Amino acid sequence: AGVLGEGLVPTPWQTLRAAHAMWSDGTMTTDLRASLARAGQGFAAGAAAGTALGFLTGNQRRVAALVNPLMSFLRPIPAIALVPLATAWFGIGEQAKHLLIAYAVFLAVWLYVHDGVARVPADYLRAARTLGVSRRRRLTEVLLPAAAPSVVAALRYGAGLAFLALVAAELGGAQSGIAYRLQVDGQFLRTDHMFVGLIELGLLGLLADALISAVGHRLVHWSDGS
Image (cartoon, rainbow, N blue to C red; front, side, top):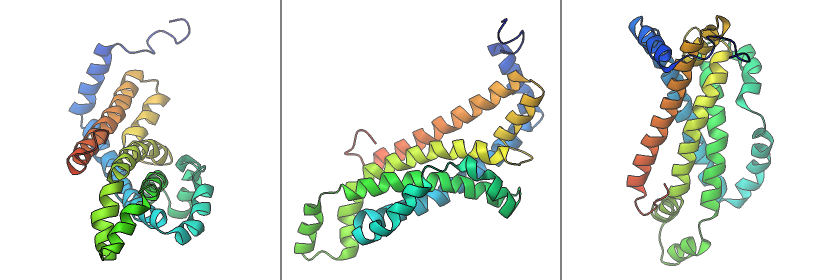
């Protein structure tokens, strides 16, 4: 108590009361709606682009030779470092937030998918080519199923990063959202409300991971680790 100060660590009951108050006055639903929209749109865009490019670079060595150095340059640059630049270019509107989240998800998903596709045994594709299987069928019936566990892992990891980037995006300028509310509550030392926000972020990440894992397990039923 002497280190943190009296009242700065809320009890479970205080946190529950804060959650009830935030739900009752509509604050929680407003913030959840805003944050879910941002995380969802950013994740969808980043995951789609990362998956597509990952398949391309993982399957085409010449393309990989051109793209991989750029990706290696970008990966150490976190989304939070781009907040000032995104704000300068796009303002504090939703577009900047979506782009920041998509950026973080894109890089992570690309890396997982690229590695997964690149590790598909060449014998699989060579055998299909020898049997006269078309390029499109080799992609959909050989490459995609073999790399599917890596794609599912990429999406699970990307979903977690979407919420990490969401925090950076909302702290860069917003009028609603879970991270925005955390910042406001922090200024007034409302730690019970802050705990509610942290729990919300954790639960959203948990639910997103469970959903992707469940869908992935159905699509890749032979992979117990997906």
